[in-house]
Length: 339
Ligand SMILES: [Zn+2]
Ligand SMILES: [Zn+2]
Image (cartoon, rainbow, N blue to C red; front, side, top):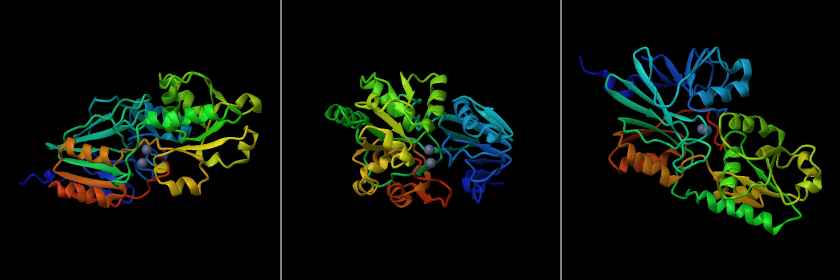
């Protein structure tokens, strides 16, 4: 008998519910409720409610419980980084992906074949989560959110300095920064602290729950406060964080002449910033940029590359040029705006 496991597509398949590992009988970040799910991280397009059994890191389990309550899943099994779990004879090990707190790559081993499903990831250090650990493997499955050579994210410190500069320039205004509730919000606060900013950071009510969860999980973010109910004058010369959707809300009318900022990898595209009325675009991304993606493909050394959600073509082309077998997976249901 030939080793049919040597061909990953014989046992790891794209289905309407998402990537499915047949011998292990589990789905990865399924788009609809399934009996067994392995979840890479807590963003809503990866961690959905209603699965019967969930395997994820303790932090991702905590995030899912906070977001979904009882609906988070029938049973939630927390497994730490680096501790392999056997699922029907398939070994699954979670290792850091550097994307948000609790984010993991899946290292799947079956009959001597090693597959890494990266989930979402970035390579630069993030004070709110452990750093991405490259794993050698036979097949590497990568995201491609910013997979075009035009996407090169500047150093975080550069962007944080732009925000602090604007703060000093306009002492009578506040800086209103759009941030996604999970990951970006807490990272921006942590980067501000690392840059020496120790004043209270104010936030929209929709951001406070996950921020407090991060703090309870040991991420030090200093003095963070609810912006609601704070006197207008008190917010002059302060930083206020809000979900991107709330930047144009009635809610902002209470703020002292806000400078509207948005922290996102998409802010690299000037037309996007302009179209959204962003005065201060901050290119801070939780996804790998082009250099980080290509560096990762080179480091993991996989002979085969599958590319999911984003700009697949350029990365497939890059890998093919390097002598890898590469293809785009037609996976749907992932939201790029989450970034
Ligand atoms: Zn994500
Ligand atoms: Zn994603």
